[in-house]
Amino acid sequence: MTDLEAAKRIAELTAQRGGRAYFVGGFVRDELMGCKDDLLDIDIEVHGVKPEELREILSEVGEVLQYGSSFGIYGLSGHDIDIAMPRKEHATGRGHRDFEVFVDPFIGPGEAARRRDFTINAMMQDVLSGEVLDPFGGQKDLEKGVLRHVDDKSFAEDPLRVLRCAQFAARFTKPGAEMPENFTVAPETIALCRSMDLSALSRERVEGELKKALLKAAKPSVFFEVLRQMDQLGFWFAELGQLIGLAQDPVYHPEGDVWVHSMQVLDRAALCRDKVSEPYRFMLLALLHDLGKITATEEVKGRIHAYGHETKGLPLIEEFLRRITGEEAVISYVLNMAALHMKPNMSASSGASVKSTNRMFDEAADPRDLVYMALCDKPVMSGSRPFTGDPDFLFGRLKAYEDTMAKPYVAGRDLVEAGLKPGQDFSELLSYAHKLRLAGIDKKTALKQVLSMAKKRGV
Image (cartoon, rainbow, N blue to C red; front, side, top):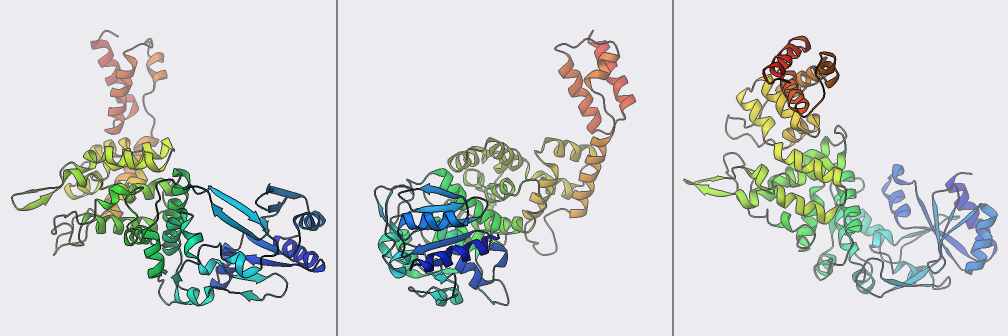
């Protein structure tokens, strides 16, 4: 039995008891938007039957899973279906989970939909008849591409909805538009979001919304632009707010300030996130790579410079990341790559040697990602002079590095076989062997040079 077949069976059994079952939330919205690929998780709300009756109905369809008796939320083993009863919620604190929930199967569809966040998520569709109930004008907002909150009181009780609003705006594009055009946020919703305090949210919830924007949006910059409109960069994304109005040399950056540049880089990164090792950490790198300009920017002889911003920004980047995530591997990657992000284009511009680019790639947490980062970061051409290297140069040098690393090289066992005993000097000898490897020295010649060095040192 498919998920949809199970949903229909639940609806039939509910109707036999005098109730009705509705598809709700994102399922209805995505179907009306024609997002067939998103119709994987089915949400059903069952009206007009008591909780014990709903359990009996579900047990006739499959093994019942209960996620919280007070919430009235159930599932079926082997199915991606959430079955809920109509409920009211009342905030008891400032956190996302600080709610008291009241299950009421008989409050009616209109009142049940009032607790939803946006009008486009407040539509309901009868599972059996296909009738769409739209008590708050969600279809009209969907056609116009507008995000509008349903209820002032219930919306303001959940501060996570500010971030959900921004990530929906970034992810959704107007149905039927010839060119992809993102949703806009209704002025009254912007105004309400400005008044909300996000400081009590958990970083896990914040990161969850950020991930959706970075990984699912065609233009992730919209997420941050909407938060900027709402004056909500301040607590979780404070460093990004400091990029607004931070000037750059117009010769190299005619696009504008560091904020504009960072948003452009982020959107370019979205175009190649399917080519990198781990998209989430790559997108964070693109977002944060120029935070160092906050402290490094200065005017020298009438020109704006940010010398050393790639390293001066590392403390700011780490502070941002530790506020958002607990993934040490992500933090390590972004810090490593941010420190190197200037080197590829500089190497291409100067025509650096293979030995030099080999050393650069060897420092990188992911050499291929570093090339893509450099291409996303490329400044706009000014006049006839391009301020970036040829992608062919960078990928060519990457291939040279990968070929070098694929060749035989001097390892610890080679030194042991040559009669050397492992000891504190081994690490220094192996470091020297690695430098020879990066320089393209073949293994046989490199081994001779390493053994010669060992002999001179009396190893």
